[in-house]
Length: 536
Image (cartoon, rainbow, N blue to C red; front, side, top):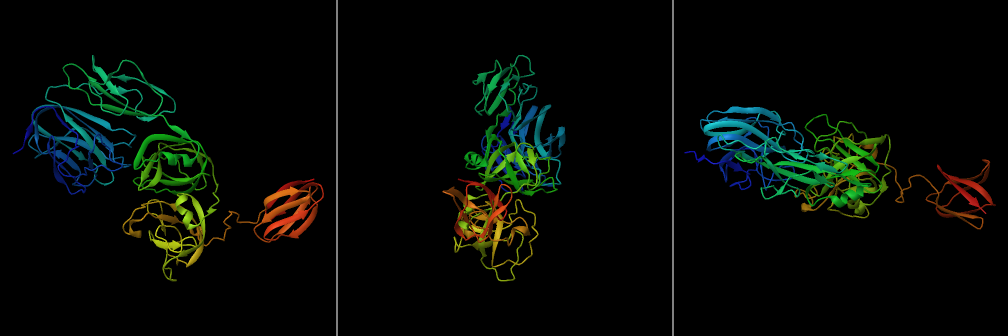
């Protein structure tokens, strides 16, 4: 026999009798009564909730509803909070009611398209005003895409003929504001009083009474509640007023990476970084990804909120990146707010030569590893999609922390897939820190992916660890008419006067070299490098 709730009902979904972690459906007892859900009521990064949990639904055909298994005696206004799970915007839900204990359901109000997550839950409200026994359900009415996921929280039903105070309006809704704001709060219900908080806590009638504009100079979460005599209290409205913090290098962003999940603060990167890699799928349900690097660090930009409109290219010099800093499985990522500025194109990062022992310090950077051995290469094993190949070099005769792989979170199939894995080669690659704890390999130890982007990154020429891949003059100095310099290999050296006459030509030796010149200004050339010197 169905239980019946008579007083105003509120359910925050924080104390479930059982935690559903699949989409097979199940009955859950909450404080308000029994609910049935095909969703997931666990809180992981990407779930949206107040308190400790909410219910997440997916767009599965036949498995896309959550509903009350009990009646309420009369209903005035039905309202709840909602937000897109992770980056899965575009889901469509409809509130439905049943007056025959769930035998038939009819729509209430209009269908709602869930927008991209901006940082705060949205509110849904519908006037029902039904005096008899009634129950409600929320149904995903777009069921062709299982990734259209939405979180539902803070479900409320007021009593029949009990009106509800209008939700307050916050003049600066959730968003990015690069200057300080004076935030005003208003309510359309005449004679109402607004209570608010600025510390993220839920306002009550004991909270601060709104009387004048609230000055906001740093990122602040404002929550507002409106109260009026003879009416139910309003829903709590929330706005996250983000004032970004400027940083001029990528290494600085690592200081703000949370222990897990997303740092809701936004940061504005004002330095210049080069795009080393892009994954730009045509699918609207797949996240677009870039790997960028400046002279301090590298990082992944994950279009988590699906804000990108501009198409970026490898070699773009970018700046003005407005983003949150996130950590997924110890992997730092940026979640951008919008497109950013491209200063120029066709740029490149010169890979620094490192050993495998240095790899953990070069996350998301483009590097070159010389004399890289592929363990298990037998002349027939081929590069495959998402295939783990353990590697080592002279710095790690054997390793449990470094593997070669094409990381599936960002990679399309490179053009070398299907070619035979060599025993040894010099390789340019991105260092990817992804799923560092995985019980299927390396006994659950942390590991890093080495990701060559194309076949052009394989079998590259040996590069001196100093970073010079072509002959050049190093440590040049002049004293008492003698020019001192170093070269990494034997090369032809020529010295020219300011009139362009070649006054000296010789083969250098590896390491220290000296030449004697009379007083004057000269140009010393070796390979493509030229240095201007003054001898006196």
